[in-house]
Image (tube, rainbow over all chains, first blue to last red; front, top):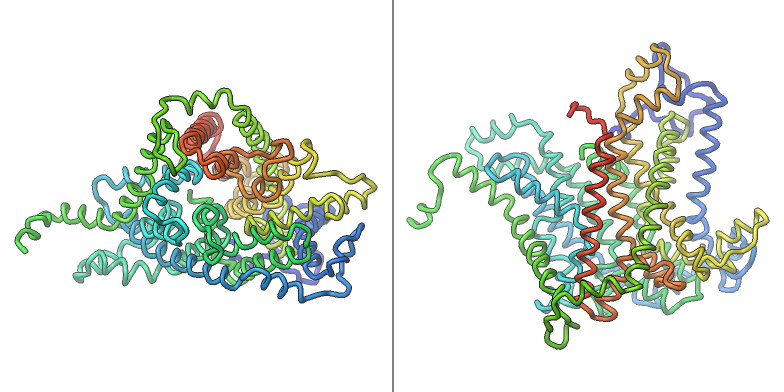
Length: 306
Length: 302
């Protein structure tokens, strides 16, 4: 929150070497000193940024090369000629449109499940006082500490007994039950910041708890819900181990599994592999650019108030 | 209707309790269904030999006894420990330093933040495919960089000495995730603290040592615990890029757990492995709380 709304964040369009300071007010004190020092920091940051960005440049550059141009050493950075057909070749070699549809079905179900279920639980933990509440909240926190892999085997056994293997059920149904400890935690933290007067006024007017939850708290919590929705999308889009365990027939594959199998059949066609990888990364990058403030908000909420 | 009325609590407090439990009911049900029952199943599985097809057979402590003599189990522990010991502290320190630099109000901070953060949200599968190509011995980006500086090619993924370092390097590409958490924390430190310190004659180093680090210690602590738990669950890179090789040098713990469960269909033994993972993470978390947590400074003075 602090970063997204920070109007004083400098931008690249400022012409001056050091943007003018308001007189009498010292800017962030720690590193701000002489110009040489600031220049040094700037150079270190630029070098680091180049290192971080190189894999992306390499990815996109490789994805546009001819099959032969990719095997050049030292490599050429600008593909010449650029072959955009790599994308259509890669994405039609395996039915990525079906994988995309499957992923979107799973992800949307998860979003509905988590927003509905986690917000209900978070409301109970944040806005109603009852005996045993703190005990159950401690359980929420402790389940957060248990890694997925610890319960992976018994959960698989249970889902296979239920006959849910090779369906979307193991990847969606559990989220309708609480929506994940982390999401409950995140929403509870947010609900607690909303003023109690609002609920009290509604109660005096005869509103039920469910009514307060739905008509007052949920509309006010839209930014937090957006954050949870975005992280749910990312988790579903990126999830590999879940679909790897539970989806076996190709018509049920998600994009992540599709890319992994594509890799196993196309071991040396790096041009096509990079095109498919770019296609999988692009939506995530776009989402970040369009919803940056919700990302930052989620980071602040999870990292600091925790 | 009368039976229903009898169930309704008469007092306001009783009704509030009922409402509260109704709200958190999804979590309670989920906890029972997907947490408690699987945990009990895991206890039961630990004492069985079962391949999911033929009927399970009770074997007592055989699965647990097997751990001691299982060379691959120890190898996977060693690989994961080495990975954790290098990647977690490196990520912690580099992420913190980057955040410090970025908090100095240099020009273009939004752009820097984006560039450093983006790698951490790249899907694991796409990242694995990309890095398999970056680490390619003949035509990869990393060796091209080495070549630029006049260094020889390294067989990153074929040499057992280099495969794990290569995957650690890959994991550091994602350090922007912890960096932005630090950055958000740094921006929450009031300016007046530094002004007061300056009046008292504190230099850059003293400000870092006595203001920034103590105030940031809860966040550093948070990132340390998340980092340890995360590094014990590294799966995709080992599974897709190296498949545990060469010579099991990248056989991560959860990869070995996965193999026992889904390649060898040994449910009992993989359940035993899962318990060990749980114990390791529990003990590590408690140790970190015990020895590092004491140094953590909290605002409320507790």
